Length: 268
Length: 143
Image 1 (cartoon, each protein chain N blue to C red):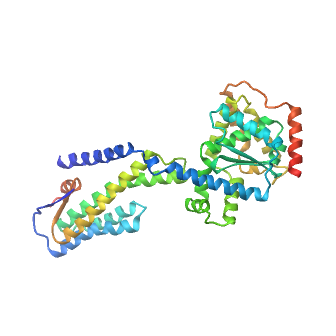
Image 2 (image 1 turned 45 degrees about the horizontal axis):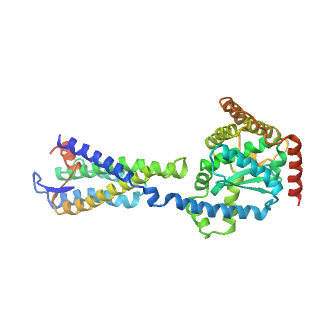
Image 3 (image 1 turned 60 degrees about the vertical axis):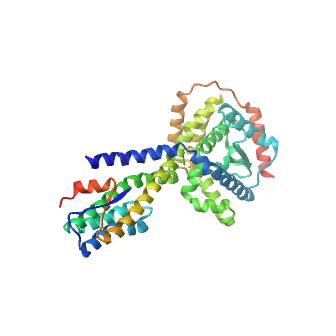
């Protein structure tokens, strides 16, 4: 009897201590969020620097205007602060876009050129936004690069090779299948809320999955997003549960002129 | 947290040393086993199995050490699993996680101190009875 009472008190003491400590703002006290935000910011800067050293960023506001307008529309409709995500368009013919730490996102000129409509670009942006908002990027980096190495990079204690390798990890390797599915589902929501047809993302994925067979190597985004045919079907399924009123981003005339502009800027 | 109790007989030097080693086993294993909590339990369990036919004093203290290690394992395994799921999975560092980790660390420190004290006292032939695990050892070990 004595043993049972003491055992009960022991368990109760453990949970009471846990509950009591939980009342203290430990996350704030240890500045968990601040530390990761600072490190993320440095990491994001270094990776963008490393990437744009090889493929120059397009600074022309006529080019970035459209992508930023798409981003702003998605952010506004989904209650995401307009300074949370920063988009960089780079001169690179590979069909690729990827999320980086600290809310940065890279879109290759090759991807814009490949898209048949601004809605397809919006689909890719929404998908990468979901990776950023759900913190998939940092999780992937911690898993594949290691926390200690990331801290060393952020602290400027590692060489350029390591930063380039980290950038390569983000641009050329896939997220876990569950994370990709999560990003797809979230992207469908983001697009529907912004009055953009999520079917555009499904169409883009499906087209890429078909065409990469003929042109392997040029479609980096599809190699980092496997099982795209299945995912396109899943996107269409989740789209059916999300009613929306489609408001076009730009007409085909304006879109084609924009693509020409991107092509010219990329050739500079 | 612990008290010195009366034992039914006065253990000789050999028994005291054996009983003390039961605690030392888990202390040494803590150094080797961190952050794998099961190592401490395995070491203590191994020592317990090797001494289950020993004298009453030795068996009693091996049981008390084993019970404390089992309780620590029950706390440390979720801590390890939770930490790994933050590093490799989708979990994030939350207040609940930090408070759990601090609680577990506090309990581990207390257990470590109690183990060292018990190792020293039993080596002197004294009968150290821990709160919770002492009465449980009484129930489990019959003279």
